[in-house]
Length: 302
Image 1 (cartoon, rainbow, N blue to C red):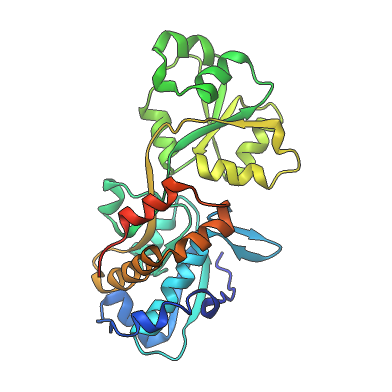
Image 2 (cartoon, one colour):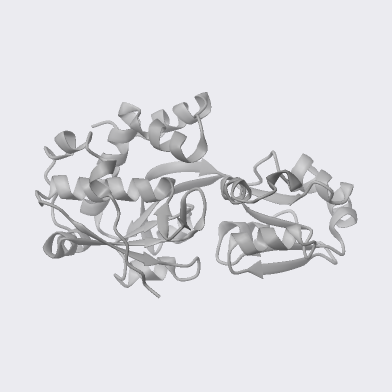
């Protein structure tokens, strides 16, 4: 059910306003409606820390901040005095449909860009990069730790994977790239391995803690965000390797290049000036050299 909340949009993007105000936005289908209504409808997943999550009734997260900045860019380029934000909770199963039907204008969460998804929605330039990983407990059986945490499943042959995982259950969240990896990747066809879908990441990690499942798979950055919020994070271990490559971006309505251009200009400005590193540090900790190089490589020149 939709819920409404205020985003402190003005606080996010004061530095970019003088720059993007010079770039007047053209009108596209979604952008035209946003300007006319002075309202942007932002779809947010609330279970994907540190990208988008609820805490004490307030929205926080890396992507939430970026969407606030993108909304401010629309204000600047469209010569509006201000803009309202209608925040709508979405789930992994309905988030892209909400964009297709016009229920939301922008999707903020932890969204991987794939070619299949690009058939139905559009994406901004990349905002983050991670990959599928696994989480289990520190006292999990050694074979499980070996193939899911200490190494990556692709490093082992089917015989080793069969011996380690037969009779175990691995959890995932439906309608995610992690679920695709489970059904098509190196664990596909392991006899005696059970796959269990969960309604949210926290429930999947809780099932690991309670011994109901051997491991839970999701994007590694999300797994780290979930366990940071737990009382005993040291109980868990997360895979050091990434099993896939997951480029994240803000999802937008397909076919509205004017809206996409405004968003990409705002993101590129953040990357070019290094302001993105402040947003990164608030949500993930101090960025390393690889993070700096990533944002330098994906920003678009003016």
